[in-house]
Length: 373
Image (cartoon, rainbow, N blue to C red; front, side):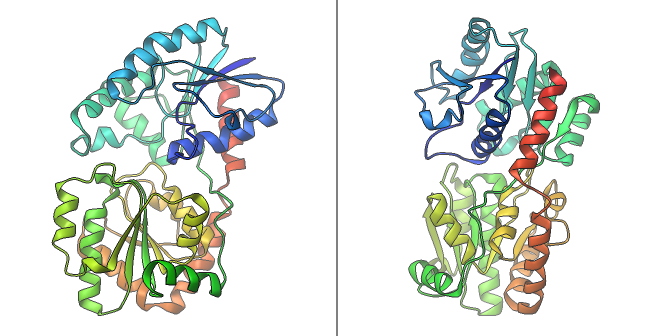
């Protein structure tokens, strides 16, 4: 069978959440199924490192979808032509976007519906495109894979999708995240915070990641406890808006917040493994891979008590209401002052993380593909 795959988010040195999902699943599936031919479809010149096995061919089809206005021509004009030309038997799209203009059976991976529930957090053009097309994508697809039971039920309730055509393929966690020794923790803290312990935020700086409330909560934590702890922010300022700016300018403890931007994966593993805790409190998430990364690195995790986060973290995390600065600040205080309980949380995190792996994800996604065949 010839399987065409939307691989436009396989970008060398720029892999984000869905890009990592694509990388981890496709690198396994293609090697495990040499009996099938895979055609990876890119929207710009691609790195051959992403052609994971001999049964994988790459094809470049412009224009690059760098702007939302280019999504429609790429998916509705260019992509159907390429699927027909390549004689694809099946089309797989790991990033949720498919073509409504092709007759090729399609498996769509829809990670979450944040744009449906929080349209005000997105630029108008992106918001309108997603909310116009994704309901049709969900109905058009022969099968849907999604990364949590929460998102499966959301698809059923929000779009009326038949639950029998949705498969849950929980995310995994990269094996580079491991507990660190005391000397490496000390060296990393010395490098970034002059030796002080720190909370860590990881993620794109966009409204639903809730950094503005975390900044306010951290400021409150510092004021109320007097503890000399910093906050490190790792991630690109994709949509640093007035809300983020106001939250930062209003802080009493600005000097204790360090913005590191994007880090290379190996350095990120060191920064995470050296943290006092991972503080991951988005208001909406389809899964939340950083939760598993925190568990794997052996650090306590503070996360949100909404959407998919409890499904991922189980009993191993400290929870906060992401809409409440007071609740987030209380979570920071709990972790900073409960050393004995943190040891219990870390052990619980190790056990919870064992339930998830990219091997399992790839196997579940392949099962979904086989059903569509």
